[in-house]
Image 1 (cartoon, one colour):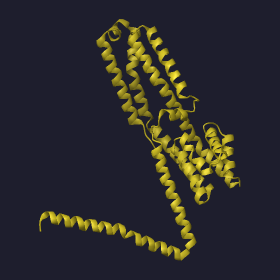
Image 2: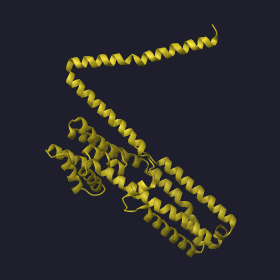
Image 3: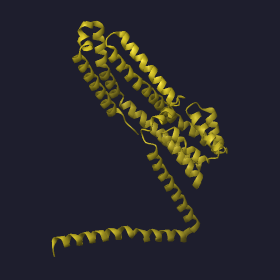
Image 4: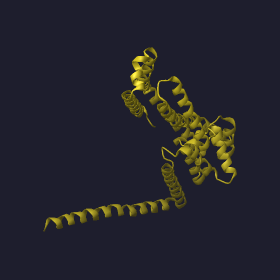
Length: 318
């Protein structure tokens, strides 16, 4: 028997064993299903339907994760920041910032007009973008911090006998933004015909945090399969509070590293500005010669790379 034939036999035996292994699970499942039907057909069918609904919700969750990536398009980020800006206004703001930055740099007299315009364009491209992301992250953080309290309000209302929709309306009227606007959007979606579960799932579109997704899935699954909603939301509130505690603990542990990164990142520009103020003639070659401009550009690039690396090292996600 040649070596090739021996390899083919081994592959066939292993493949046949694998097929038998995976196919043999099906009769066991069917037998278990049959036994459960003997014990109680109605209860087994109800459990199977509920399991299928939960699996469908999990698949929907995974699909939504693919649709809503970590870095969505900037137009969506602009909507999530809730600044009331459209792309036209954002472009106008960027142009004003760029022009103002160029004028301020030219008034200092350190750099020529061309370099001043370059710095102004860089300011116009970076600063508004950073401001939009800052407002977006601040809004997400405020929503995450306040959502467990809103869920507790809903739980107390349900246990007191009020409908879920009325409890959500109470949250929309009694809380501050961003909770107020997000839950009011849920009420508006219900008024145009969406079910409560679908309206809560839509919350994740404008508030892309895992907590909003968990809340929407909990409401959607309960509306489709039934169950004790007050207990489900109470457990969800406990989970969200534990996540918040873990996030705060990690932030406290990494605070020393963040302070060190801030000090190290701010030292080069602070020393440069201090020398330019104390001894302008000493810094003149850096501002007014080609070699100085090259060295300054390399230094700025290296400092920015260092800040980026330090930020990635101390940034933890839960």
